[in-house]
Image 1 (tube, rainbow, N blue to C red):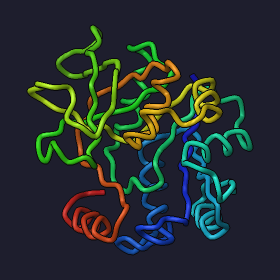
Image 2 (image 1 turned 60 degrees about the vertical axis):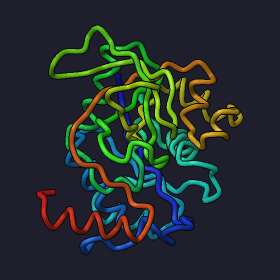
Image 3 (image 1 turned 90 degrees about the horizontal axis):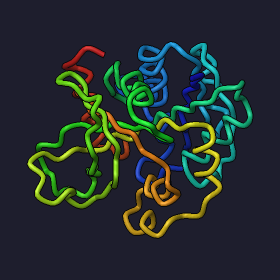
Image 4 (image 1 turned 135 degrees about the vertical axis):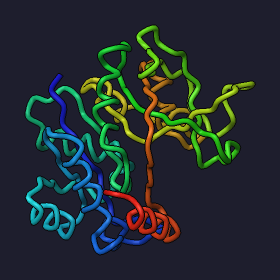
Amino acid sequence: MKPILIIPSRLASTRLPKKPLHMIAGKPLIQHVFERAKASYDGRIVVACCDNRVKKLIQSLGGEAVLTDPNAPSGTDRIFEAYQAVGNGEDIIINLQGDMAVFPKDLIQKTLDVFKHVPSDVVTAMSALNEDVANPSYVKVAFEKNTASTDDALFGRAHYFSRAMIPYGAKQFYKHIGLYIYTKDALAEFVKAPVAQLEATEQLEQLRGLALGHRYGVTLVDGDYFSVDTIDDVTLVECYLKSCKY
């Protein structure tokens, strides 16, 4: 495997205008994501942005950035455009969300490891969900555990993702973490396909991949995760950073 990590970034956020440049604990959000990625992953990292201000910021940090279409319909389309522009033979594309300000250091590597244990076209991650299980903002995962799972590591094949409480009767629910790692062929097929019926219903793009027959491998990870969508999220992240090592 030869992976490349691409962080999609766009300014046109309705809930938090100019979100990538919004200051959090003295740094723009995209800087937090980029620096956390560098601390977690030692391969190639590219920020796919649609504004020169973001590009210049990343370059000032010694990073690599590429301008993409500001009207790209999704972050997945943006990373594919960036990959087409600057890819150098990589066959695995890591899509790290541009608003994931806090995530554990082992998230990326543990998710990459799924390819070793579960035949997959796309791999992703989940964490145990123990509170506010009915909240539709928490996307739940229905999966089958793989025989490679041990007491220290859980790998599986995801069968469905939903904002509803799935699977019915579960004693433990699991929350999806928005990190996707695609094979090159799966990503190319995904972005060319139309929106799927269930994707439109649930507003979850991974359901397009399942409709295409893509195999989604999944792993269980521990740790704290904070994505930034609103000003309240900014406050939560700042409080977290003041009380925890980062």
